[in-house]
Amino acid sequence: MAARHCLPLTLFAWAIMVAHLGSAQRVIHVVVALCDNVNQGIVPVPAVLGNGQDTERNLYWGAAYGVRSWFNKSKEWKRIERSTYPRTNILERITWKHVTENVFLVADAYDGKFIQQATNDFLSYAGGYDPTTLQVGDIKLAIGGSADLIAYCGHDGLMDFAPPAPRQPANSDKRGRHSRVHQQTVLQRSVEGYRGHTSALDYWFDGAGSLYAGRRSTRLGVQRKQ
Image (cartoon, rainbow, N blue to C red; front, side, top):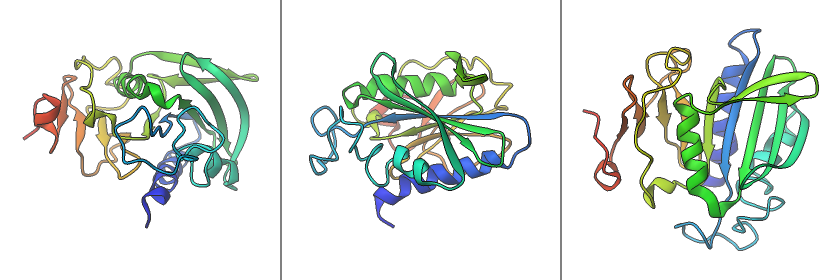
């Protein structure tokens, strides 16, 4: 399967998993760093897909297999809100609701120039920091560090810059003992440890809030988990 197909399919699988965990409201918050040929250390993609300031055609957002396009076309998710510039350097935010379950997916499209902010925000959310309430009509959604599942889509920026200093998890009890970070080809980071679901890891947090790395541990300058 081509790499461009892995992004929506992997995220879609995560969304299905969360959707079937019960009737209580569940929220998935997705951080998307738009593909950017100019400002990211990537092998360039076609220019029309690699403009980090163009939400309409970006590889990870508006293109055929981008997050926005994929979930807009899905028969299992209904878009309920769209906003622009909800926060500094976030170009667009879209909220979908699962058609049969009480599950919401909120995706933020970050300007590709600010991939480090997107990465740092994701890691903060994974540790339970920056909890935020999003008002969508008469519905209140817990996003950021208070979301039930956090995902990251985009270039692996940790190949180009170091992660922030590790911190103690702010809400480790909510996600269990471990908040784990799972690496895919395109969906590089999504929080694991949710209701006991685990898999092979490259980067993860331990219960004490330390960030561990697998094969890139020397480059990142962080401790390797044995």
